[in-house]
Image 1 (cartoon, helix red, strand yellow):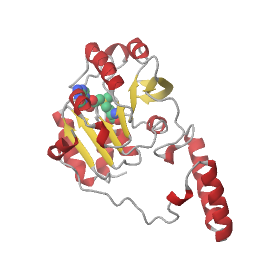
Image 2 (cartoon, rainbow, N blue to C red):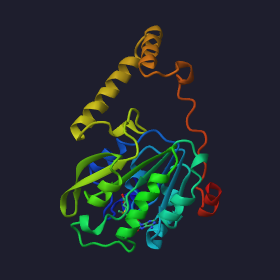
Image 3 (cartoon, rainbow, N blue to C red):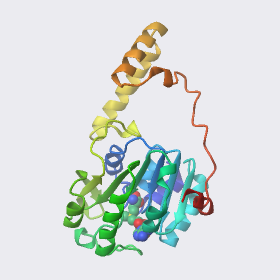
Amino acid sequence: MGREERIIRTYFGGKAASGTYQKIINQIRPHDCYIEPFLGGGSILLSKKPAHISIGVEIDPAIYAKWNSKLRHLTIPCLTIQHGDAFEFLRNFNYSQYGRVCVYLDPPYPHDSRKSKHRYAHELTDEEHRELLLLIQTLPQNVDVLISTYPNLMYAEALLNWHCIRFQSQTRKGLAWEMLYMNYHSVDDLHDTSYAGQDYRDRERIKKKVVRWVEKYRQMPSEERSAIFQALCQIENVDQNTVPLTSTDKNTDVCSDISPKQLNLFV
Ligand SMILES: C[S@@+](CC[C@H](N)C(=O)[O-])C[C@H]1O[C@@H](n2cnc3c(N)ncnc32)[C@H](O)[C@@H]1O
C-alpha cells in the first residue's frame, strides 16, 4: 500500500480495519463496473481487485479534494472520483451500459445506531435513509447492491427480503456489530479471491494452499496438466476453450483517469 492510499484510508467510520474490509470483499460477486457512492476513505475501493471501471462519489469538497490530489498515484485503472450527491448519482447513472455493476454503499449510519458522537460534515437524516432504502430497491437487475450499517430497525424492516450477514468490527469505540445487506442471496463466485477465508489464520492457510497447488500444477507434464485443467473446467462448468491458458490477455483496456466532465458520458 502506498503512502497516498494509507492517508486516504485513515478515515473515520472507514472500513479499513483488519477483518472488516475482507468480510465485505468476500461478499462481492464478479462485476465490470464498481460504484461507491458514499466514498469517504474508500477502503473497499482501494482494497479489492479493480473492476474495468470504478467510480467514487463524495459530497464533501475537502474529501473530494484529497482524492483528487492523490488520484494519479493510485493504481486503479479507469477510476473516476466525482464530487456530488450519491442520491442524484444513483438516480441518473446509466446502469445498462456497464455490464455487471456492483454498488457498495457505506452511508453515515443512522444516528440512533451509533455509539460515537463524531459527526460527518454531511450526515443523512432518517428521512434520507428511508429515501435511500427505497431508491436502492429500484435499481435494475444487472446491479448487485451491498449496503453497510449498524443494527437498526429501519434497515431491518426496509430490507426484510434481502440477504444479510452480521460480523464484528473494530471501531475507535471498541468492537461493534456491522450489518451488510445484499440484494442477492448466493455468492458462488467472488470478484476477488485474495481474502477468501473466515479469519486471518484461515486466509493464510488458503493462500499457502494456493501457492502449493499452483506450484505442483506448474511442474506436471503437459498431458497431466491438461487432464487436470479439463476436469476443473468441468467441475466449474466453464468452457475450457474460452479460458486462456497463458496470461497474454492481461487487461488491455486500461484507460487513463476519467474526469468528472467525462463522467457525463456515463449518465
Ligand atoms: C461512513 S463514510 C464512508 C467511509 C468509507 N466506506 C471508508 O471506508 O472510508 C460516509 C461518507 O459519505 C459521505 N456522504 C454523506 N452524504 C453524502 C451524499 N449525499 N452523497 C455523497 N457522499 C455523501 C460523507 O461525507 C462520508 O465521507
